[in-house]
Structure formats: C-alpha cells, structure tokens
Image (tube, rainbow, N blue to C red; front, side, top):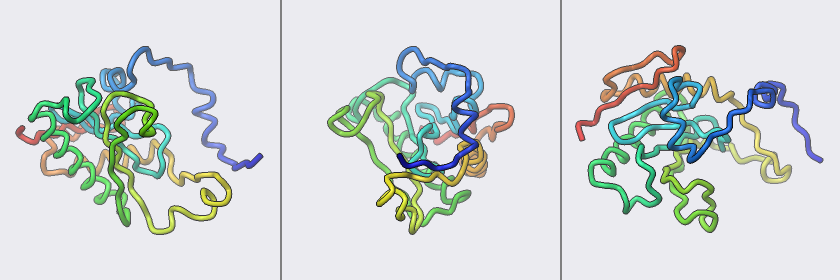
Length: 183
C-alpha cells in the first residue's frame, strides 16, 4: 500500500458529518457561509465553487444556479453569464496563482463521460509545467501542494480585483465576491 504523510488532512477526517440531502451544487450555494461551502464568487445566474477533491490547487467549477444537465438547457442570459464568469475565473486564477496553463471542460453524459453529478458544471483547472511527475505516473498518487483554505483566499482576492466585482465580500466572514456582467 502506498502512503503519503499528510497531517493537515486530519481536519477533514475529524470533521462533523455533513450529509448533503440532494444535489450538492443546489445545496452548497444556499449555505450562509460561502467560505465553508467553498463558494468563492457569484454572478447573477452562476457561481464558482472550489472542487473539494482538486486535481491541482485552484481547481474550481463554474456552475449555473438552476439545476440543468446540459448547456443546451441554459437560456441565453445564463449561458452568457456562465461564459463571462468562466473568463473571470481564468483571470482570477492567473492574477493570484499564476499557472503556466489552464484546462477547462465539462463532463456531459454522467458516468459514461466521467461525471458523477448531473448538475452542469465547467471545470477550470490550473496547470503548471511539471505538475504531472513521477508521483501520479508511477506511484499512482497525486500530491496537492496547497490547502483548499489557502486556495480560497487566493481566488477570493483574484475575484475581488476583477473589474466586474460589485461587492468584494469578506472572505474571513464567509462572503463570496459578487460580480455583475450586465447580462
């Protein structure tokens, strides 16, 4: 069995049970504490959620507020807002995490496409040269080098600096950044 020492993960192991009744992408944005829910930014029709099991630090998802399964189910305003929030997410990542590249994409079609949640979401994954090294390739182990709480602070600051931010929110108080694209 492969082992990697990660003492900071004890907080996750010892956390109070947090069962989510229903779709997590419908439940999480309704929570009062955006930081605890990992909601880092919101726009009129969509929001940005940090991935709880990130591929890399900064792995975020742009998610419509309404539960839909496919981009063809979005009305024009939501679709445009989704695209603008994805662009703002790219800018926030570049501003505060400075990745060498970024992967974006959607898993449409459930299990067949590698998706486990049928609520539409677009992954935005920062990449750095060399982030795929011997650990995942030969050791079948992915090392995440930054705690999700620190990533939240980075992205929150990146969104707060966006020209479309109308309320920068207080990350420590659990407020997401509010953006307005005029859609």
